[in-house]
Amino acid sequence: MKKALICGVSGQDGAYLAQWLLERGYEVYGTSRDAEARGFANLARLGINEKVTKISMAINDFRSVLQVISKVIPGEIYSLAGQSSVGLSFEQPVETLESISMGTLNLLEAMRFLGRPIRLYSAGSSECYGDTGGARAVEGTAFRPRSPYAVAKATAHWLVANYRDAYGLHASTGILFNHESPLRSRRFVTRKIVAAACAIARGSRERLTLGNLQIHRDWGWAPEYVEAMWLMLQQERADDYVIATGAAHSLAQFAAAAFEHFGLDWQQHTDSSAALFRPADIDYSCGDAAKAARILNWRARFAMPEVVSAMVEAEMAEATSS
Image (cartoon, rainbow, N blue to C red; front, side, top):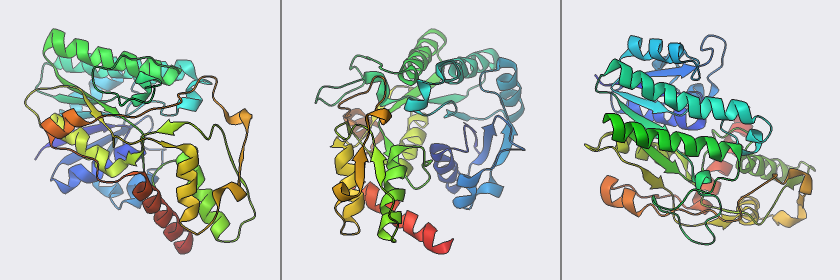
């Protein structure tokens, strides 16, 4: 039986990845800073909480990382842990850099130290590219990070590339563009929009307040993106891949799609506030996943409208059952 260790199993991607691996017969271990105290709502929502072995691990503590990997001896490690909010990274830059950059370095060092045939997937980010200026970014597009989160992800990306080249580790980075699902935390703007649209459709008089409505993002479906993570580690040669839909939409278009689901005009229920603008933001972000299509045979099937519809339907179903 194959064994996989998911660092950051409690998040959106970690939960969907755990589900994907369990369906393929893996023995799945998942880490959290305090596995005994933390709730694993996403795993429970997918009905797999009892099927994942949880272990406490501090990703920015090398001794903790080495102990866990030495105990589990996984064939595959998925590095998804760390502070995951771009906006929050401006308020918590040290935590963001330590959890992402140092966390990645600790995993790589542990793999090098143990010398076992372990394969690593590292969660990269489209934020590293900064503004793509209306073009679709590919693996060789220059990085121009515009947030502490993006700087941390760029550092992790180059650490993975360095250890792969210098020590021959099977370590790959997935440069994932935005990907959403019903498991998104409500602090993320996409879930905030969907939750507000559903509440207003049910009769709430609340108003939705957003920041910059003209930012464009390449939004995909998270369950599809974890498939790409797994596919990277099934390749004989480790490499880096852009994972994206290839189409960008504005935040206004995302909001419109959510409200249109109920026949509502989003502009009648939405305000824009400069207080929600980030200190530095990206106007346009879009990716080209041609390499993933060619080598991994991976292509996004859900476009932004399908992503929104799936999130709205799940939100309404949850509200009805509660």
